[in-house]
Amino acid sequence: MHKLQDINLSVHINPQLLRQLWAYTTAAPGEISGIGEVDVHEHHLTIQQPLHILRQECSMGSTELDLDALADLITDYHEHGKNHEALRFWFHSHGEFGAFFSSTDDATIKQLTATLPVLVAGVVNVAGEASWRIIYHGISVDWSDRIPGPKPSAAEIDAVRPIIAERVTTSRFSWYWPETLHAKRWDYRGHRRW
Image (cartoon, rainbow, N blue to C red; front, side, top):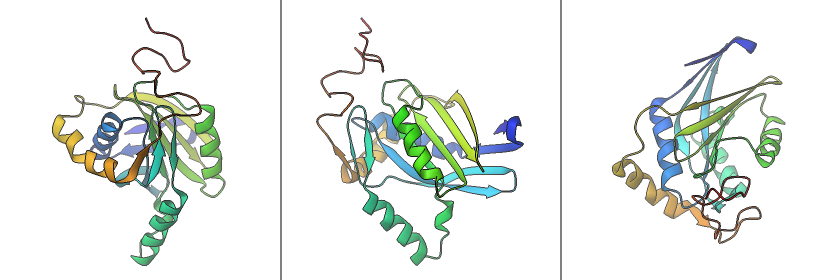
């Protein structure tokens, strides 16, 4: 649990959800993103399962959610009597690059917070590094940490591969990172590592 002193807010992220985020990040051929639920109770936020991996197009340096798939998810929540306003968590991966919020991520968060006064965003990489941002009624707080525990097991990765295969279309090129720039040879700024 994280205590955010600046806004008198505590945040708990479900440990199984953290493992899922890391497994999806490790198993995906490029970036991947998902939507999840945040339970808001006074000054306490709980990021919980389920994690929804929607149809999306991804590359080594970008992920784009299918907005029709997001609309279908919201409709499904309505039809099953669930509160769609709980869908306040957006995560995406940065593969082998650093876990940070890019200017594109900042723009996405700005769009999401236009209608959501409370939002939690996360960026995860294959090393288990994570950056988090909470927007709570106009106040933004960022922090970084590492997902606890060992790297995802082969069983954890194999469990998420069918969902990735079904819902993620891999684009050959990204507007930012051509697939030919292998992540192990280049850092996120495009500089050679060796």
